[in-house]
Length: 131
Image (tube, rainbow, N blue to C red; front, side):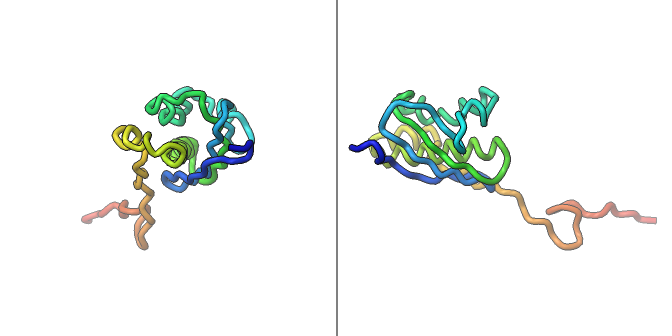
């Protein structure tokens, strides 16, 4: 395998999309051209992102380069986790069972409901006054 070959997958969560490239070499997780620690300063976000590596016991074996767009920080972290999980299954199909059991291959389908005409939000109506 040459230096430029990688495994590609896309992960999604809410309105965020993460395009993930997984290289078969040791290295850092780079998000939008910056180290993961700079983009996701909280440890809980970084734990969420690296959970596929912990589940499959492949921590530090891959270099990840990702481009993440849309949504908020938590949504982007979730999309990145989904993308890494999908890329790992492409790299090694034997890891699919562990990732599936941990629920990392399921796309979190919860999205914001659209605002309806005549309402303040998706379901919030104007307060009713009897008199």
